[in-house]
Length: 311
Picture 1 (cartoon, rainbow, N blue to C red):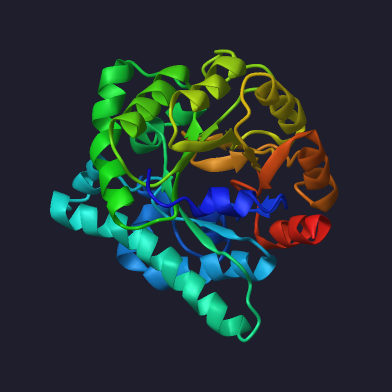
Picture 2 (picture 1 turned 45 degrees about the vertical axis):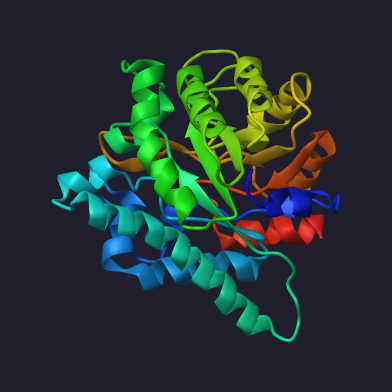
């Protein structure tokens, strides 16, 4: 396995703060992400906006920047008439922009040393490419082999771009978790965390048991942390406890605001759930989490509260 700065950071024993929802923060800043490429659209049209948003999370106290590659796929770019070589360059650009934000933040705070700042290359689920809300249902029909084929080249391209780790995130079903673990085990590359999207404290979005999903982490050395994201905050503590029953891997949690995504209307619905803040994050650390951040609709203000609460 390649150099593993995340495990080195975890070895300090201190809780680690990750960033929040990159795409929804880009929207809050006035960027139009209404098409099917979502945040990946700005890799092409407004890369500086991505850098500035990463910077906002670093300034709030995050130690990990998750790249704008969640919805950056060869298939998605092809729908925009972008060929494979240009698509691969755009996927790599997501890592370069996060790395640029790291360096700019270091320059901002010099001579103070902010400590390790990591780039996590986001690998969104197959359902994100479909752009129909499938990642919130896990209702796939292509099977494990088809999912391996879908993810293989993008994993290789992102790994070659030099991130500190891969963030395999918002995974809604066991088949996709298995496919990703298979690919990691079959090739060398950066370490990864594997993060599932859950319906409640016991089930993935697909309805499958969360324990079976968390246990996949132990099947591959490259999976150095496992957990949940884009899940309602109220379920996180229970999910941490269930994860602890089946794996000793460090736990990563970065829930959404508690609102839901209407894939037809392409808008957020419902009201925010329990806050992602310092007190809540402290409870998650006490339950067994090691890495805490936020997902959709969790902005730098909330990450600042988390960092202050854990600091």
